Image (cartoon, rainbow over all chains, first blue to last red; front, side, top):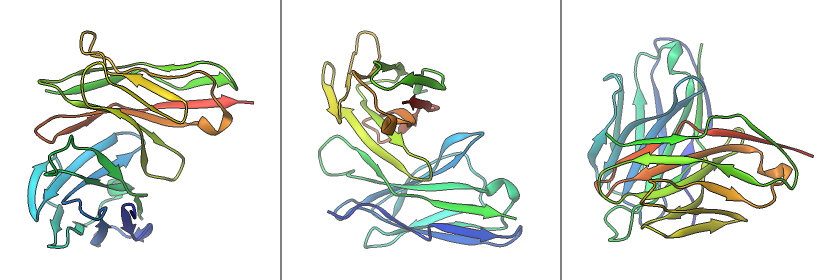
Length: 115
Length: 111
């Protein structure tokens, strides 16, 4: 089985721009979660989508949004970028709804640098 | 709310030393417990997991046992290698589908 894929792997943007990150989960997984990882704040949960519906949400401003498509692929959008948005954005694929204990599998991440 | 507390790092060991990274948790119900490892510039890799009390997860020489009575899931390895140098995260996931991660412990193994 192919793992979780994230594109692009690296991005450089300037303040005020917007960015869209993409995540393709493991085949058969219907849940995708997004996390922001920074040296100072550690791993912070953004949101989770399951079958195209937002299932859980973290404490991030409305500039951070996401969506999930019918093929379970997910996108995350950040508008009006700030310097503090520079981080590694991780996507995790979960076997939610399978009837088995849920396990998260992470992608390699997208490293975003905001200048 | 749910929480995961893991041993503060950094931890520095010599090759072939014994490793323990402590992890305790607070959660309602019976969560699943996980250890993830992150190498520089990469995402988190699932190292091992346990889904019920007294289960032992193991992989690549690492082990951890789900202890309900002490709410712990300590990571151990009998003989570490330089290639084990990484950041290790303890995590739980509840039956409601919410995940909580520890702050991570940086392990450096010196030859």
